Image (tube, rainbow, N blue to C red; front, side, top):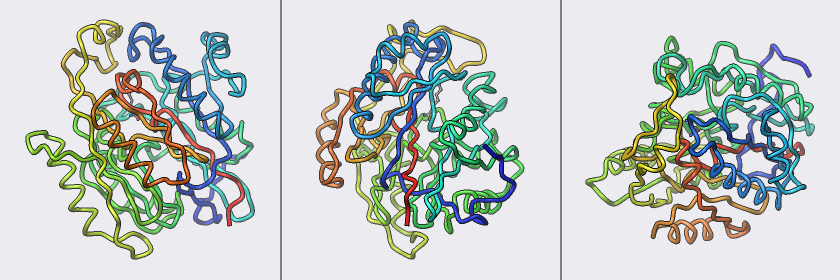
Length: 367
Ligand code: KQY
């Protein structure tokens, strides 16, 4: 497939909202023992549950290394396509292709530069070169030409779009020193609008408290549909999350989207603080250059990190009283989709959640 020298905006390709129809979904099988406890076995169980759940609704592909291929093939539902591919870890939202469509039913991908959430400044592991090739290989599998940005670092979890010209992001992440330190905010906006084919960027100040991604937007806020968002929320003023969510709420209450609409904001209550236990911490290999997992550290738990797909919402739950509240709110907001709650503490222990480990392929037919 071709590497293109034009931009999606020039060519009439755009990124649809995640809530629009999909042709499929991707994940990467977890295995690195310095991120996933107990040799990644507990994580593999939950990843299997996520992949098998999604496969009930749309074509599912799981990328897996040579060493883990037979194990993954054995565990995953036969409906899931399993493809061997080198990788550094399992965050396909971040290292994978951002897929775009045009009015003629064609698919293309954006292949951002990936540097493991901050490169040598504050990245989470080293090296990341295999992950940086994942987007290109996904484009090959999908038969999609691609726009490669060698000069612009971005992870898919740091953006959401409404498919109608609005991009949602956080300043904490996109202006962090490990991404594109020589670029001004306006230049970054221009790049996003050019490569997602959008008109307006909304900048939430910060992401979820203690999020190791420098505050990805996909853990704090997401579009339910154009003009409507869910925002991670707590009423507990003593929790450092309160000030972060309040700041986001105030910001979002005072902006309009690309179509000039004010946003409807739904508060999605976070679970109570979730901390790494000693047992969990001891199960993770300690490796120089990889973020340590220490007992007592607070995890970036949020229900906002859900995936919307064809007729379903795959929702992380944590065994918290607010699980039910989240299920209830999302059932109301997505009356035509089945809410699929998945106990996701193991994914959270690795540093993200269901949205971070999935990447949708939008339906090629778009008017
Ligand atoms: O998108 C994410 N939340 C990924 C976090 C990376 C974690 C690596 N330990």
